[in-house]
Amino acid sequence: MKQKYFILKNTEKNELIIREFAELDKESFSLLCEETFQKDQITSAIAKGKEALVATIRTKNMYPIGPFAAKIAEEVTNLYESKDKDSIELAFDDIDILTKERVAHKPLDDIESEPVEIDELLVEDVAPAFDDSEIDNISYPIQIADDDAVNTDDEE
Image 1 (cartoon, rainbow, N blue to C red):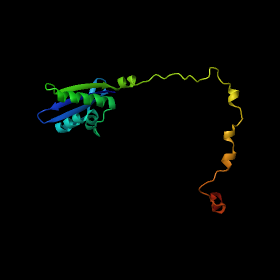
Image 2: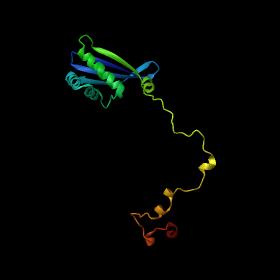
Image 3: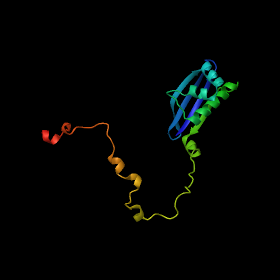
Image 4: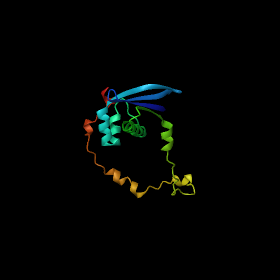
């Protein structure tokens, strides 16, 4: 899914506005959420670091994934450091994240080169570790007396 974030620094009202858009139809973006933050809240988070800023811009209505949130935080920091910039638009595509994070699987070295015959798999020799002797000696924490057992067929 493609997403856009429009970040606006409103110096007149001392606030930051982040609008989240998503491509719900081909090349047509719809507004999903708009969050407004006070300047003091954002500048305090910037001073504490990137993680604090990411935590600040994530809300219950707008919660971008890690890579998107990190980029948004970086651009918000750039907006507040720049005197001539008041807004920025960021575009993301989930497919880019999915293809970057895909890890190639390494072949297993310990696979036998010759296949095992089916008959070898059906051998009925039980390993000593799986004897029934250990299972027979299990004690149960709840015991039912024989005369307390309910027989539903007899009651009808």
